[in-house]
Length: 270
Image 1 (cartoon, rainbow, N blue to C red):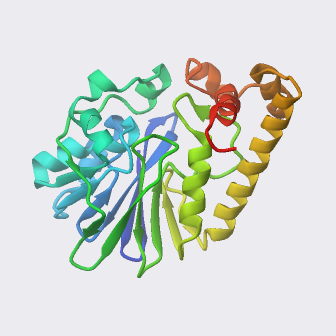
Image 2: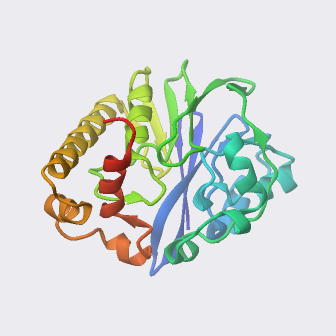
Image 3: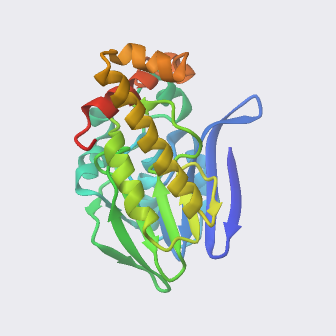
């Protein structure tokens, strides 16, 4: 399933495997001036290939190396001769996804295993014919996470750094205090339009970014307070969230409220 929309010069492709006429776990790819930010998942590769045919893509930037953001790399590299730019820690994953990605069953079902691609370390700036993008290192969701900022337009491409709503769970490898620090960094920029990895584009996003930071910091303080009172992580999770997040079951425990609690407790910055 592919949904196409435009925001000025930016073309959004929302991509998801279809099930009973509905998309399952949408991811997003953005196209602007021959540059693609993230390339979607394996299960939507044919639709993505058709939608980008003849566009003239010269550069791909991966915000991080998770399977739902890199699966079109090989196609664009092979077909268009596009260069692939990513964090240096992402490059081994791009080159050997099968040997490096630890994918849960739901990730195989929703997105699929990407093909290998050959990436290059991303510089501090990436330029197209009309735009200059600053590369921001924003770890937390993953160690190799990047955001892309176009200051003249106020565009911020956030990958999976920003997720809407009130977080109740986290990936096993997520680091919530680093997520907060990265959110605080981008919230200090002049951002007029935010392009997240979900494809739910935000206009005037700074109030929502700041509210997310406040929510996570208050949640962290609550977790730490309960821990100081002697409650173990499992009890803290139940006290704050009640039932475990449904994806804890479907992900085999790789995404859960317990991981979020433990990340607050194990993080370096309190």
